[in-house]
Length: 565
Image (cartoon, rainbow, N blue to C red):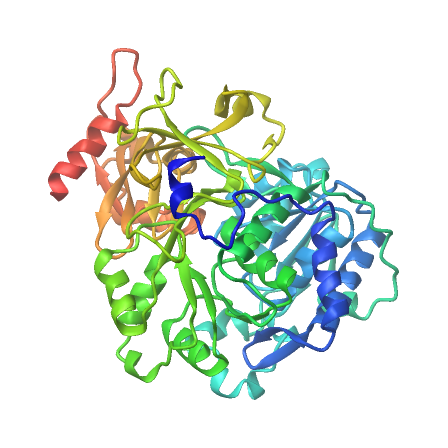
């Protein structure tokens, strides 16, 4: 027994066993139970469970015809859409591995997601396909994609018939308007409609709970992003635990707005919803007015989100026109929920915002607040089947209650290791009390009731509205600019996003007076995902360095914190 078990939801066991089946079996089972039930509502159009399974099987059949075999990695580059969900399950049905990629990534960044997992096939929406094709075309011929399947968002809805759920006008340029044609050098580009009209037969389902299902990427303190190996059983554990934790049933109506390239969106929203047989009201991007309308009109019951979404919705001038009374669960993570906002939700609707904590390596939550007894601005308690401790980062010995140390996690949701990086894998695991614990890199403390609180970071990381930005990755991209001699990326305070990215830059002598801070910012926006791109650039003559010549980033970070204060 751990301290938090005194406050454990009485209806739930402390541990559960993960299913012995694959993630595909969850969707197929619900389609047999509820074939005509609405699985997805997308901008006014509904898709049944029968139709969703049929689409996923056609994707699987096409992938098999293209030579995809068990264990092959397939890139999925889409914004939230029915096609993303059908493609995700289709890849799993083809016995392959989903490589979810952030749609914000630029061609230079996308190259790594092709070469590192040795992907030869990808599925993308039309707005993102040209960038992915460009990334592939710029690689050596042996590393390029061989097949790219492209879908238009309008393959899933009719803009003329969306009615009250019409997308905002600002979305039309990428959602509705014609997009540039993707040209894949040395490869083939297929249309989604052709795939849906195909007559190929999907292969036999041969994957088991112990096979790899997902290879999401996470960045770190050094180098390029690393793939996290997740088996079917690890994702299955957390989607099932999440369902139990939030009172999941097939009658739930889920708002699907958290991006489904992200581990939380994949596990807690997508797999949680369709493993239950629930209905998902799907949004391709966040828009507070559309979200308010959908929650009201579709009687949404469950909403997993990023706190900035709630802040934005509550700040809408039309908020009094929305009816949130159908919500029975609201929660999320990625950033702390401001106490005043959580209190407003409680006062207006009697809703307790349930904060959670997890990483890509832990298949989303390793901690969550008990819905019946949450604490504000708290990570929560160790999740179902999880064992979490606070240890001394140097000695790795467990620390007493209340003392700050590194949060470490053991449980069936913890990943196998980093793809083709045994060195990095060895660095994040250690043994304690005969168990294999994962080192989160986050500093925290546990109170006397077993609730965990985040206090600091061991790793360099910037948290911008829940998006994790790793300075080393941004610096590596910035060094490609011909004017930059040195760069150090730090966090700067942002009243809305929590933190934003700032770059302290030393220019080459040959470019002094020829390049402005804004020029650097503009270049960054063209060459990296917008959430990574520095919002501030400061030119300096030199960066502070240690005796060994290492840049003293912490000194710059402390100076920034003092200046902000």
